[in-house]
Image (cartoon, rainbow, N blue to C red; front, side, top):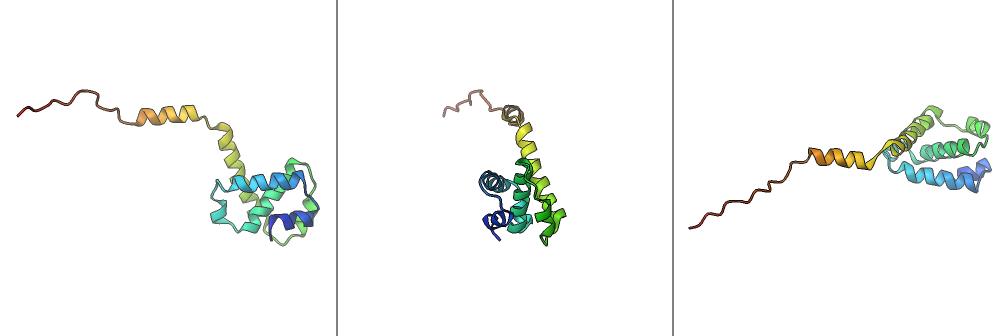
Length: 114
């Protein structure tokens, strides 16, 4: 089922739905779309949005016929992405890569005159 339909069933729209969509978009930067079915990703994103907005969804999730361990595994993937974004310093990473690159030879090439 689509994310919007789940949110209608949960009775949550507005800010929770918007955040869930943002999390879905962020999840595309991970491997979860290759590892899990879309409905489980949607449920994970809804769960994360509900936690952020302090919306109680425990009973709703308890009534779902889904593996909550898999939902939590997806959540861990997405949270790891956010941790990476938080700790990533592009300047340090680029500097390290530039130091590993071979330096160009700046000496002139001798010309052979015939």
